[in-house]
Image (tube, rainbow, N blue to C red):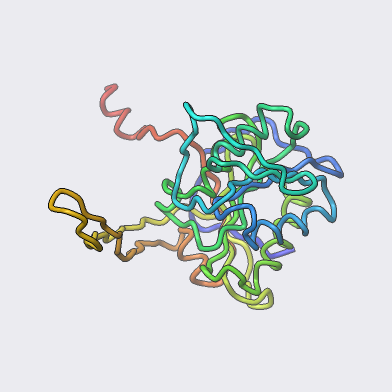
Length: 266
């Protein structure tokens, strides 16, 4: 197992119940890269060596879709192969169907990924991968989002990332009061320095839009361009990944700023 350490960060973990894993778990996999993505299929193969794995994933890429739910349209569910279904919707739809229908049995944990590309800092608000794990957390299931720091769809380190997740869920305690966002560096296993439990970095999106086509005076098309600037600290996920550590960030969904709230309440 990888060496673990903690940066100078504190987390308000209310010590409720913990998840005690059975020998064989029922795992729901989803992603936002689509059901045929290498990351999902490699993770499925690896986890299936020890657990019962079910896949419900979008039928196409749905990157940066966040927590979109399909509310007023029917969803098309297509059996992809054994225990695997493609959905015409989004990662949140996939998880909700997995938890609230009879398509698959009741599951123990939801894992979203392996995403092609990192989900660091403020990325978590846009990411469909993280939204898959967040949706499971909202519906009271333990969950993990896992991303690889590479946009190459056939990175040679996808298998190492999958091996890490299998080892992690088999050996580590997963707390009910958080969901986990894990980012794996795009480097060989023997260059990984260990695991860091981290906070989120600050990501600034320097966006611009370029007109790509003028159809008529009242209609045109535009394409998003831009760059990302990251402000990290020794506590942060970006700092960990840049320094060859696996980053694990425990997260929750309470967006209340309790510091400001306490000022108003005085």
